[in-house]
Amino acid sequence: MRSVIVLGFLFLFLVIMIPVHLILLLIGKRNPERRFSISNTIVYWAFRWELFQAGAHIEVEGIENIPEGPVLFVSNHRSYFDVLVLHTTSTKRPGFVAKAEMDKFPLLNWWMRNICCLFLDRTDVRSGVEMVKNGTQLLKNGHSMVICPEGTRNQQPEMLPFKEGSLKMAEKADCPVVPVALMNTDQLLEIRPGFDIRSGKVKVIYKEPFYMKDLPKEQRKKAGAYVQQIIADTIKQEGGQRASLMKDSVK
Image (cartoon, rainbow, N blue to C red; front, side, top):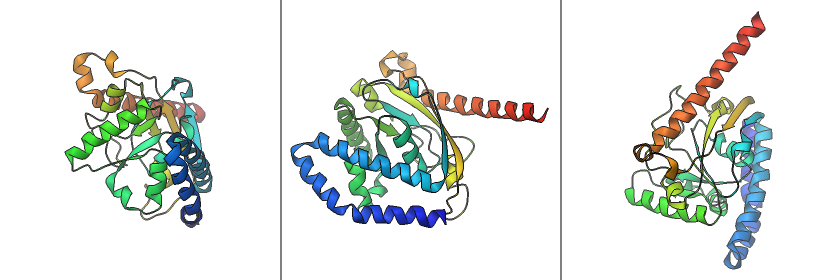
């Protein structure tokens, strides 16, 4: 039932908001930043409502680690719901780097562009270069971004290797990188076969920011692996803490 409600709301939103999107296009011709601001507010509340309908109970840690100004959030990728969770909890209402296939969904791709999303063809090197260029410009213009360097959703215990070069836009824009650990977002959907949305507890932890320029030269070359280790250690520590609490409750 939750799946029908969530998909039904998404369909109605995309259709009913067509006139609003057209108005936003007109606004954007004179004031692009105003278009982004209005779009982000609309999408933020739509995402909040979708998470409520899905029964997502979200626990957030580390909000104090998010600095002022534009940020590149780098996270693991467990679920379609990652986008909704990051957009609504990060305080920044960021855009996202999405796979090029998402640009083929009519109406949805409109709103993705409205909130500064970028589309990446993972098989085309030139697409990657263009993404870094456009992402750098967005960060310099004050828009925070999210990238998931695994490149695809992954429900395995171990993360896929983070793609090196995924943090290049932060280096070029000289903006802080904030590692983000997402836990249990796949419990809402992907852990079961089919499109079966169920309620679940989700946790997101924002780690301390760093600047690429502050990393040693050799570490900077493997920045993807560096951030992945931070996230992996956070998830491992969180799992250990939960196991400890469970043992204490049994005693």
